[in-house]
Structure formats: C-alpha cells, structure tokens
Length: 385
Image 1 (cartoon, helix red, strand yellow):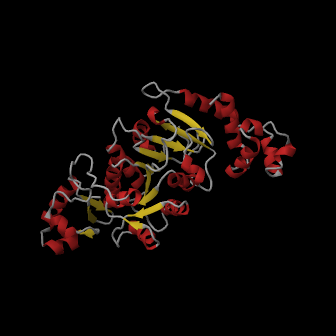
Image 2 (cartoon, rainbow, N blue to C red):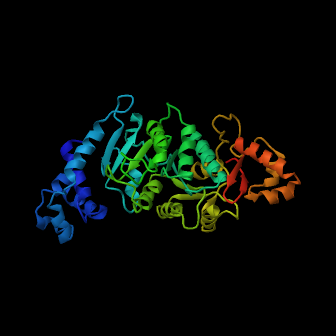
Image 3 (tube, helix red, strand yellow):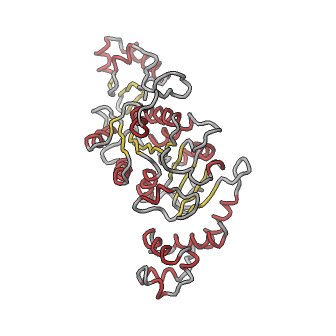
C-alpha cells in the first residue's frame, strides 16, 4: 500500500460520525477512499447525512501523526528481515474472506505475524476454530483449554482467541505448544481490542511475541488505541467470524464469551461447549449454551468429528499414541476427590486420612500439576481434555 492510499484509509476511519456502515456505502458509491474525499458535498449527501458529509470535507487533526506512526510501523522488518506487518482494508488480498459474511465487517485490519502467513487465504476459513472462556477459570478449565488447543492444533486447526487472561491465554499457549516452524497455517490468531503497538494485559507481552512468531495478531483499531472497555465485546464478532466454529471452555452466566457464542450462532457457525461442575459458576454459561443447542464436547474428537466428520484419534503433542481423554498418573486421592471442587474437611471424611498426611499428599499432587487450589480453601482434580 502506497503512503497516499494509506492516508486515505486512515482518514476514512478517523472521520467523526462515519462508522463502518456509512464508510461501506461511500466505498460502493465512489470506489477507493481517495475518490471519496474528492467529492463535493452534494455528491456525498446521496450516501450519508449532512453532519457526516461535513465531517468528510475536513481532515481529522489526528491524521498526520497517525499516518507517520503507522507508516513507520509498517516498515519495521521482522526478526528474519522479512516484512511481518500489514494493513488489509476491504478488498485487499490479505483481508479474510469469511469476514465479508458477517453483519459488520471491519473497514480495515492491522496484521502482525510470521512473514510466511502474510499471504492471501492464510487467515480465516475452514481451518480456524475460536476458543473462548472465563478470565477467571478453574484449574480444570485452564487445563482443558490448553489440552484441547494442543490436540486441535495437532489436527491442523488454527486456534483463534482474544489474548485475554484465563482461557484465552491457555488456548493460545496450547496451540503454540503444538506448533512447528514448518506449519503452513498460523498456530494461533489473537484478535485484540487495542492497537497492535500495545499489549493488553501487559503480562501477556511474552505470549504476544510468541504468537507473532508462530501465528498472527489482528486488530481493527488504529495504533495507539488503549484498552477501552467497549472495544473488547466488539472485537468478538471478528473472533467468531474468522472461525468455522466456537468452543466455549468455561463461562459465567454474564460472560463476554457468551457474546462470542451468540455471534457465532447468528453467523451460522457451530457452537461447542465443555460441561463442568454444577457447583462452579464458571460452568453455568456452558450449561446454558448446551440447553440452547450447543454441542456438548468431552474430547477434541467431538469437535473434529462435527467439523470434518469421523477422524482417527488425535494424540496429544509429546505423548505419542495417547488419546486426548487419557487419565495418567492414577492416585487414590484423585479418585476420592472426583472432579468437583472439594474442601479439606470433606476430603478427610471421604478418605479417613489424617489432616497432616492429607495436606502433604495434596501438596505433592499440586506440584505435579494434578490438583489445583481454588479460593476458599477448595481443591480440584485436573483431568485431561
């Protein structure tokens, strides 16, 4: 994209009062953004309101500094010296075709990732699955997200999520665990609610760098955009729109993940949900989705069969021949715990163990990653996806 063309696209997105819908009408009527700004007021009024037409006749004050920042950002090479940043407006070869079918396709997308994925068709479509869930998951939910993402990536799916705390991060990490340098498709795609020159939450900076090396980061927001609350639910339409289906791992009743699931359903996409404990608030959103018709899944195979038909068992990366739902490292205390959160007193009543012995065993299992500690003095066994 030439600098002049970039300036016109940025100007269109910055014009006050002109949203995506009005911008698309203008593009249909006049073609490229440069042509829009060449039109007299009378011609613009055929497509937009008088206030919008007046706004289009003035150059937004933030345009010059944003153009300079964006142009410099695009020129910066990746670690291998190859370009790894791009801007894809509507009609651009890098623009994901599945997004053209959603109600409010973004006007342009900022992309950052491995150079080999900066090609037409690399982003979105039949090989993408959205994985979303709670920002405050149970230990089991976090493990499920990571294990499902590993298995599904090993089967060739690109995992799409939102780089948020909790389930999103675990899904990205699981997909990255299964990635290789020879992958023809991105291991994972993070659709973020800020400009791509920022990482939110800040603790995910290292994760964002890993995604940029083995996958892609995507945003519809200009560089410098801070983490504003309305932007996060809005970006969910892109997460579901890029994907063939959406898997909800854990979600409270009012979770933003349910917005993504609803959007996926409205877009005609598959919706999957993992059931959980009846005692965990993080399971209630998933149970509600299942009651509404989402497919209940207990293993990665359930997702793959729904998307692609019957498939052979997919081993988890690093565990050749092991089915995704295999339970390793059996321990009598794990059997006594079950899979619901449980307190020390109740566990002592089930096992008859002395408190000191029980605490030692729980600590050992926690260090092995087989038991998670929950708020309120509760513990939970971590199963396998």
